Image (cartoon, rainbow, N blue to C red; front, side):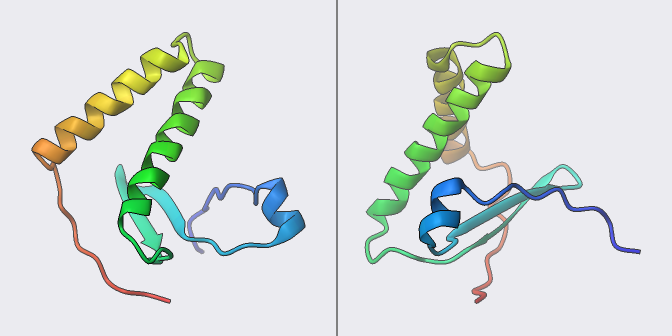
Length: 97
């Protein structure tokens, strides 16, 4: 029997207008597992996307915990800086799709 996978719902605007999934991230045994497609001609756009994701995450923390959005964003930024400076696990990547 396969283990249970708890996936997120498709965002309403994507359900209505369509789109292309570019990133899927899951936690498996305490580690992050990622599937992604290059999606953009310029890697710079991934930086913009990562900041957008961080802002969304900070808002969720503000809605679900006692942290403010600014406090959550500051902690997320700290985690980004720490991981860029000293990666805990560079992992490996395979092209899929």
